[in-house]
Length: 291
Image (cartoon, rainbow, N blue to C red; front, side, top):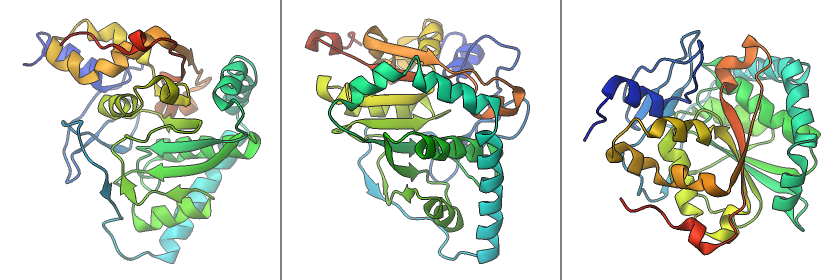
């Protein structure tokens, strides 16, 4: 069943919504992997995967292209280096670093516990060759690993990645997953899930796979604001709300800290993004509402 207010409700749940003159518009298209393209009003955005079914199994993955071009790799690397330098010297990144060192510090220490490193998992990064927002997002992750000793290995996955893009990502010190996990990685150790502007089904899959006290406490999630999803869920009928039941239920034990994009230069890549830290205490907090 569709939402009663089809245009408004459908858009609000697919984007990272918040009342603003900069709210993105959505253009739906489907590729072989079932992915959609989300395009902000003010520029091109990367392509991302969307799936209608959330009960997928993990499956082997490799880039669809089997050849790489050294000149193409060089071009992609140059684009990445420019983005890394640009963000690294920006007020935006200074603000992010200050936030990590201040308002986030105690939460991160609690998640780390006795561990010294927190692995980073990046889902849905998009094409770093074709679009600037994915390059900016990956650059932020790389800079954070450079500047914070508690960030360990970085794993990256997106089905749109080409072989050349994968080789560049590996040259930057990250690893590209050879399995499509559909967002279902269990946080058995402290893990930072870096997922700016992913689709809601991917966040819901991740939460569902970690819907246990010990696993949720091991997670930090950087991505779309869950508070905003909840604000707009009331406009939809249960058929859409049920597809994000874990997103809507996790708020009762979530600390959400929103970031500031500081300038228009970083709006497309990071608008309405938040840090999420989960601290459930009782098993009863994990009970989901009846469908």
